[in-house]
Image (cartoon, rainbow, N blue to C red; front, side, top):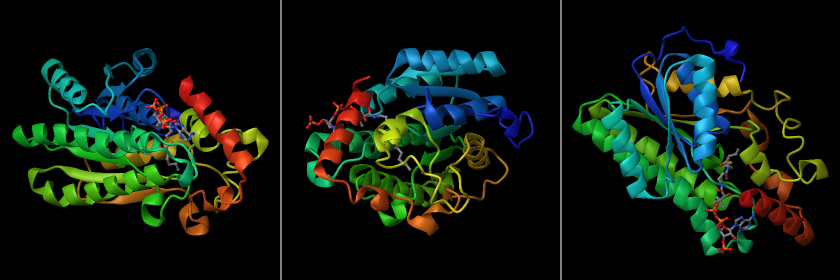
Length: 295
Ligand code: HXC
């Protein structure tokens, strides 16, 4: 990310202590960097300790401050509880949680196994609730004004063909965002979400557009976009800071798209690009995605 494109004053996020799930790579890393750069203490969690440690070191070398790295699979509620308790005990109360961790792969729904459905919904649907519930209860008990942000997708509004477990799960989190914005607003907790369009990351490309060079789909993600391009990381980070910082706190219960109007122009989902693939193309896709999962 080009940090010079962060549009806020230095120190804006001083006093904040924010946990970003899936913060070792991709969009989570970008948001973590912006919060750190603006003065927040940042914590990142994920499944791979070495990746998290490398990111924490890289960001602290670049910007100073504190980035805590925590190995935690958010599918495991006990592991979440241990991590959040450790942050609270060793650093102090969290003031913010970014629900960024996700899992996804494209598949015809008739080809999905129950395990495949669970692999995604356990991360996105259940895991996001587990950690939100854990952090939220602690904030309520200690009277902390907290900010919650979920990374969703525009599919929450019109469905996600070929990504049904992800679309269903993220739609559930969209409703959680609206529900808790109202239920827990009285405790000073607010809940918002971002629905990004295409912001290319390694994890996303490997599972949603594998084999770009073969032209199956995704290689021209920018072609149908009214702005003629994909998203730039600093754009997402600037929106995340707006929603997680203090200054526009009256924004509550909103899901904001940042997609160049791709949703309005072409539905933002995979219907057009994937609905004409044949059996062989799907088999090739699945092999490539499984290869990425195995890494
Ligand atoms: C069909 C598949 C499959 C595929 C896995 N499975 N890949 N089925 N097609 N391509 C099935 C497996 O066969 C197995 O079922 C079940 O899913 C679990 O697979 P595992 O590999 O054991 O799961 P696990 O190691 O837990 O990995 C979870 C994962 C993986 C979700 C499958 O992709 C992952 O770890 N993802 C994290 C990162 C990620 O996905 N990033 C992209 C996010 S992009 P069986 O029946 O065989 O046992 C995103 C953006 C959305 O969310 C919005 C974009 C605009």
